[in-house]
Amino acid sequence: MFWRFEDKVLVSLLVKGWFQEYTFEGMSFLAEKSSIVLGSPGIGKSTILCVLAFYLALVRKKNVLVYRSLCRKGTCLVYLGYEEASPNVVYFTVKNCSHERAVGIYRALAEKHSVWLLLDGFIFKDIPEGLETFKMLATSQHVSLSSNQATTAYVCLLSSWLQSDLFELGRSLYHFTDSDMEDRFFYSGGGVRDFVLTTAEEMKMNMSWTIFDVRNLGMYFATQGNIRAVRDRLDRLSRSFVKRKITASGESGNARIIMEEEAQFYSLCFVESWVQVIDSMYFLQALSDHFAEKLLLEFYHWALRSEVPSLAEKLYEVYLSRLASPNKLKQ
Image (cartoon, rainbow, N blue to C red):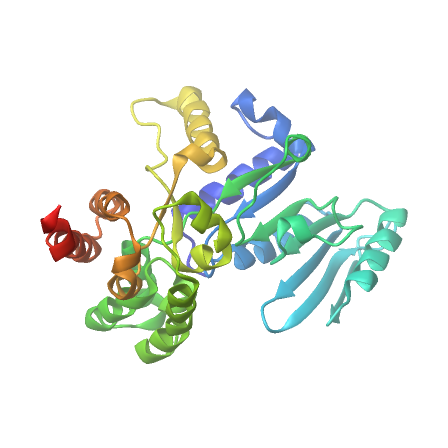
């Protein structure tokens, strides 16, 4: 398994919050709240949720119920726990499990002992009635918490993949050549699921549907109203990242630990620490007319900071082309 620094930081934040093992006291309220892990599609949220399920059951000795909504594959329920007053592990799965059955199983288990409910792939506002008391939700959909909901849940970000991490994954696990990875990154951007598809042609075919939908919806990123109207397409087109590296340089010992935890907490849990960009050069090239110049420039500066020269070069090229267009020159 390829374990990024960003994955490690997120898991550390979740576990420290759940079990009150933090050093930074500002995290003290996390133990009482449900954790919502937000991230772009295809970057590893489901993998982290499944790893945590086994960790909670086998290391922390918790009874864990996982309920997953799989795109085009229905639902699946998995239980990993223990017999009453016994070290014996109990494990069962239910494929194509209806919401009603999942709620019934959850309630029956909760009557016997404490159960940690982990949800994967559900939209926060559409969580089935009876499953609202989850411990963790992994979702790709935008989450907007009301003031009441914010008292019982918090959102944290799993950052998308940088080009350097994708290339290291490609070399170590898939034995891709550098040339092949350049071609793949042209289409995938920071989405690992797309990056490791069989061929670049398969990636292009999958993404062409998103481009088709966006063009037909008349999506223009210059207005917030249009962004909200097609939020699902925005989630598919763009990637969410933490703006800056999570470090606490210049300190040592316990002070460094506290500063690192504080930096991680603010970077992952505060939306002003995030940035949402289009990092697929294929999308940018196909839809450049739909982006405001200001947004293209923001994407360009992000690509420079994130050391993605090929993306920065393409963005600069598109930006200059837009400025030099006949309509702009007339202005």
